[in-house]
Image 1 (cartoon, rainbow, N blue to C red):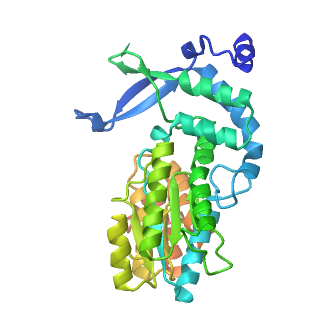
Image 2 (cartoon, rainbow, N blue to C red):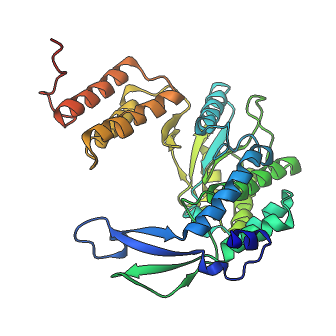
Image 3 (cartoon, rainbow, N blue to C red):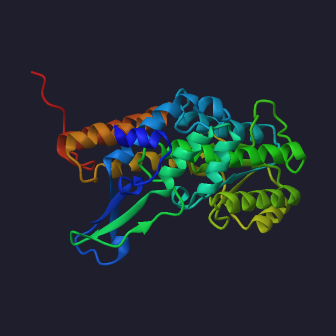
Length: 363
């Protein structure tokens, strides 16, 4: 309790001793030899986790008031499917009305690891957080350090300079507050005339962010492509959340080929027809065909090969995948039957390919 009292007074002296972590490298394969063959797992001091949990519990009820309605990540009362359905509906409407638009899917690599602390604290100040709250966040961030455990011996201390810890209670909330800066930049560009208003009243937002996954709608013109490039560069320099344009993709919606060539050259992105994966689901402006839905069925079949207990896989993996998809769209009868058959064969025979497994006799 004395440590909590000192932290409440924003006295960070000695807090670095309670906010350190040990990183254990777990081999992904028996013959692990290179760094990529290991999975890092961080063990954090319990007091730092308690402080983060307390702050997260205090902040969570206010997230809906602080963030725009198009940000749905980690906010009570909002769902990941809200973002997916918004993008899906907007793309379908643009295609139906034959309004030329490009859908830009952003790739922000290692976003949680690169977030600038100075930017985050500026965002908190702009949102009206008190000086004490910002001091608490600054203490949590600046006191963090890690040591890598090698053969049971901790290595030298690694002082953190940016990023937020994944798996921490407070980190997701802080991250989406920082990502809201991109949302506000896009809104500012629309207000300034750098980006055109969307022509459909049903589509109110150019940007649909979900944590570090973001979709942008824009007109396929050189002016808007250059404005987006400058906007993303500005946001990346300020926040540390840099979009890798070479890995971002443009999906054209009723865009003439010559206009598509112009915006692609300006942005340096790859072109993907609108059958992309967004938030773990296939995204298209049309109803998915049978061949396209086979990808979902194959994902369920792949879940049978994970190294988990048979019942755990049946409940936690094989059932969860189609349920998540059906919350977004209704699956046709053939897909439901095929998924059910895979689950049944696996549960009774241990393989998704078995033809011998059958239900237990009822008599």
